[in-house]
Length: 343
Image (cartoon, rainbow, N blue to C red; front, side, top):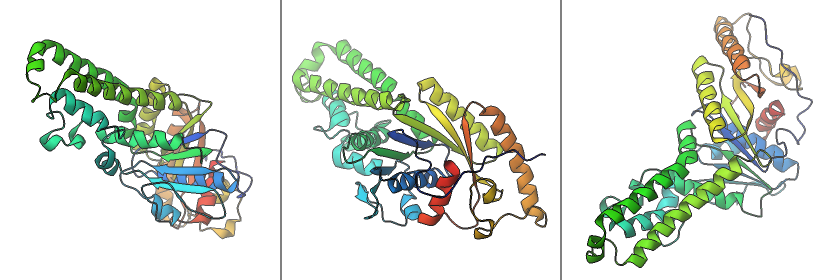
């Protein structure tokens, strides 16, 4: 199969891979390299002088390893010489510390008020609520997006399913609030006489519905940001394998249904010389030997088929290719190489 033409980038200088969007999100299935792309983009942005926060919402965090910095659960400055901050969101920890939205129990508290503690499961545990962890992560993500310290927020999203559930939360909220209202109407005066079982008086119950409305409003605000192409750039990451290409296609299609603008598709770990993609000295990096290594040649054939499929499916997107590096992508130098490939 003929090689697919790739345009080489100009240099490894800072100022690449960032674009102008306030929010850059990397999505895709687990293990395709979203964290690497997010860290590389954030570092390049900070090297330009843009105050940048990189956020990991993936429960299986690897941002600390990639940046070689112990990233905490609240934004911390990674470097003194460039304006780069990082944070790893732990949804379970956020949920346990503040319920959801931290307003007198928020979502979970509202349900407990309405249903007398039954909604939270045994002991009123809000973590038992469907979607509560995504809602807690969304709360913090909104908080960071609104933080005036940062001019750009780069997000390493959770795997595909979690990202889509987050976008579906407004409909979940609508359905949940509607069911709770119907529940109250059916029981009518019975609820008024069982104050000890249903969380007290009508004032408490109405407060619970108000909390749910607040949850829904905040989710809608996040989705409004994510669907604004002037503010948000969502980038889908995949590896050159047939299953990964198809999953990326499904994610792009679902994001399109929600109105989330996807402009870039990143194909990671391509077994081609780095010099074919980035303007770097050939001798600076180990390259795959397709001629003398039978394994490399076979894998390259497999990847070429997947790349051709990706080129066909994603012809309307800007497709970037990041070669497979011999070493792990950890620390500034390899991250700058990755950022150059994303330019």
